Image 1 (tube, rainbow, N blue to C red):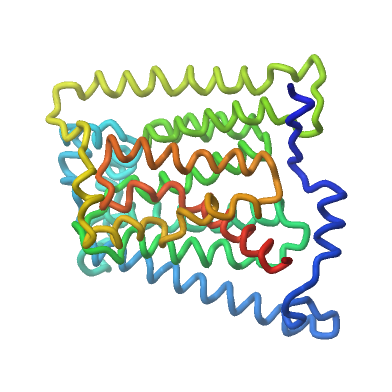
Image 2: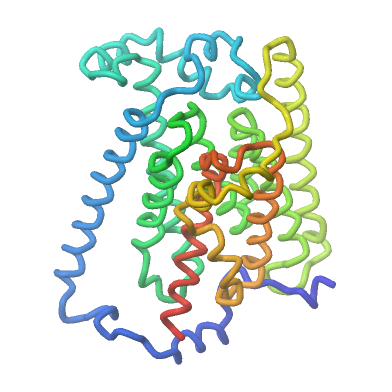
Length: 358
């Protein structure tokens, strides 16, 4: 079976030849050897623009939105579940509140950034966006023979993050762990795709304390098992992915149930949600579709343009996520799809590049 559904982590020679043979729609998009200086200037400009856009996004994120959780209760461990069970940011915020440096920084900032724990959220948010920027660029360049659109993934990240977390007409709220969850999920998908399991497992373990949805990475590891890199497997690596998936499940399960037991006495917002009435309300449709900047359908509608077979199988994560969130979340609450932003940015860039090549 492994031989019949072989995967190519790297583009094959045949695919590269097809890429090379494909016509370029606009010759102005091709690199010019005679103008290396202009290329460097453009990259510097894009980097500066991205830096300011990221800062603008983060400031808007905290000014436009209001925190849904009470910071003091969250840090004390008495906030509602399932939010309280996502304790990683509670630990960071609690440390920041008693840190002299964070207090000095907060004293120089205006509302709503005048509290040290909110400053910690801002710093973690900035690090999360930087991590996403680095990962989506590396992911795209690994997938693309040309890498002509290496700035596009993070451009899409900024667009999708703005549409998902800021430009919306339902409750303008934020949760302290959302941006970190998006960054860790993006990194885990990339490490899983590259089969960097020694790095994936510790990152996954940390992410388990931030949001339980990280468990969705485990099926992707199983996909790796059925789609080996070179189409064959040695006896030594035959069960590598199965062992990795088992280890990850062995990490996630006790963490999830321990935290659930630890905060079992807290009030809860956990429950199943009926989203059908939203689907019959046309005025709500734009808000639902705006999750991830209206781009969620792109990898599914244009799946055939994704040149890598294993990556096409990875897109099954998207409908699975939609189904699960339709049961445990509220569809108009676009932030529940935020963890898909980095992955979608890479997929959409690959699809767009393939469409340019005809």
